Amino acid sequence: MLRCVLFDLDDVLVDYDRSIRVGHLAQAIGSTSEAVCAAIYASGIEDAADRGALTPQAYLDALGAQLQQPISEENWTAARRAATQVRPDVLALAHRVARRVPIALLTNNGVLMARQLPVIAPALFPLFAGRAFASAEFGASKPDPQVYIACIERLGVSPEATLFIDDNEANVKGALDAGLHAHHYRDLTGLLRALDWFGLP
Image 1 (tube, rainbow, N blue to C red):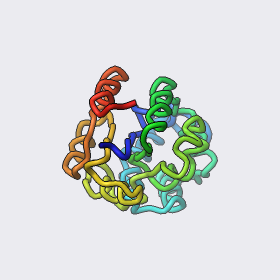
Image 2 (image 1 turned 180 degrees about the vertical axis):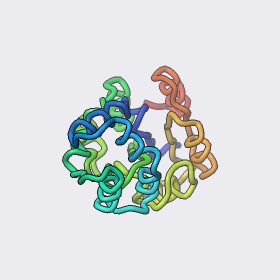
Image 3 (image 1 turned 90 degrees about the vertical axis):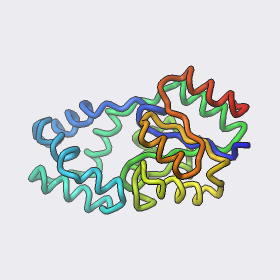
Image 4 (image 1 turned 90 degrees about the horizontal axis):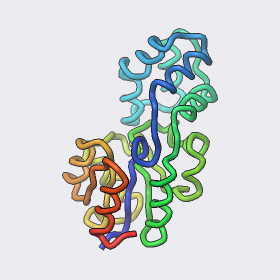
């Protein structure tokens, strides 16, 4: 019997368009989309933040050094918010599931994202309040089994009582390796079938 349903964020609960994020931040700091994209995605800085190797300020400082100009938390947050659109149908389903079992969120992101998520995706709150986690908080990133185990330990549930939902097949495999149930999200219909198998929502 399930005691927790653990959702991924990007491309499950929300649509995320990195090109919008890049363009928004580039415009805010007077840089180019190419430079911002390289700083975020090609430098290794984002991956390091996701693993918890950088504090929020160290992360912003590293991006600023890469781009040769300061990056404020406000500009970073505004760009991420512009690129993030909550999926109403999945959110409505999450509300229904939450009436039956506790739900939570686990995203591959840095501590800054965890801190700013209520600003970036306010529609997810208060539903996920106190139960929205970034991988950096656990010192690893998906698909490392360690991150799932640490997250469910924080939630006080066992692997065999947890269903994890992610659009990335590698992340689904990581959850299975950690002993969780897992569903590879492709569309709402498939998710409804998976939940129905567990008697939800």
